[in-house]
Length: 335
Image (cartoon, rainbow, N blue to C red):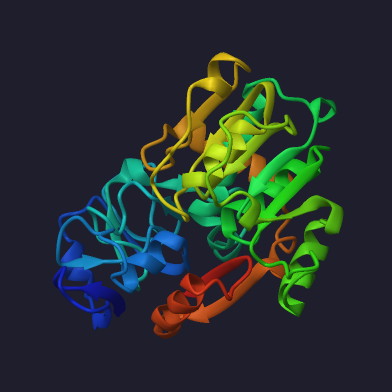
């Protein structure tokens, strides 16, 4: 079967290659992959725009959903629908943009009952990370009546799912996005449809330019909490505008890894910056996150935000994702 694979770090981009089940004979569980997806990290890896893979050769893709084909673990019998989210897939271990995937048994998670492989892939690590961010807001004790929650990168996967989760729980959401024109209106029909589906009108959208430059360490308090997938100056400005005692859940670096801030928001307003790492979370955290997603999204509730592509189109779609011309989630059909 086919897989998106890089043989060396100095390749210009990944290529579509053949992989055989025998290559995974040493793994506890062999999965016949039905669906994967494209996250920002996957797009960087496929195009070799950033050093995501830490070893070579490497099959890319941080998500995989499929059926157990062979198993050495009684907890995962042949025919079981399962998923793998992160655990180093596509970085230190061959990933899910492939027809086959072999992994240790303890990396597997169940797909929630009543949900399909396509549903799970449509959320994937992005949705699972969004759920972890929302869990951080809830665990901090922030309530809907405490004030609006800022979600940055609201057209991306993490931002989209975070917005939907928070709104389903009664929170007021303000979205930060680059998909607005000079008048504050959506910059394309696709963006307009996306914001309408999220229930975000013009009064609940902010252009990212206002956050993307250095700002004062303390600014006017606006937000009870923040879910940030952007980093850099955006994260620093979000912290500066978080209300007393609020929490900022930081999970991404689309703008950059730097964080040029000061201690002022932390010691004068008592805010908390909560780092969200999704790679090696406990099964308890993973199960809680997926239960939250299943409670919020029925089987067909995610269809509006999905663009499905065949495995062969993954690289071309990765280029579009990096060019910021895609809203929502990309599901990759590996069949």
